[in-house]
Image: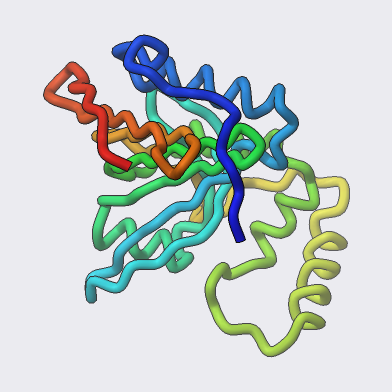
Length: 206
């Protein structure tokens, strides 16, 4: 299975000196291109035994130049982050023939920020956060649906508070790599590595 990558190029000039500005530009172009869920990103974590794990989560904002997402703190990824705060993110936008790799450290955001976001989530998602003890074993799909229905009835007409074990993380980036597909697999790869308060830019071999 082969695909020719001919859509664009990535030069040092177009990359600029600020990877966060470039991320915002590429993210905007992914939305304009109609990429399916352009904010979907792979999140890789590693547990205390050194076992890596990866899943898709949704970027909910680039706040204070940090990548923010929300989840259950008691989930496998939440436990991994508690044990090892080093994580990696990856965005892939096939229409644009681009991907972005990010390495950094994850930390919980404030309870107040998490409550603010939880309050604007769809009510079904709020009920879902109450119903799901994420990553735990359940006896059946029916068990989840019955729990969801029961909680929906219990909280009918009542404002749903954020669960204590649910909230946001922000990822402070220390390395960001931009990949642009090119002909002959001679891809453009430009990497930015944080050196104190500035960024060092390098071109990598494909």
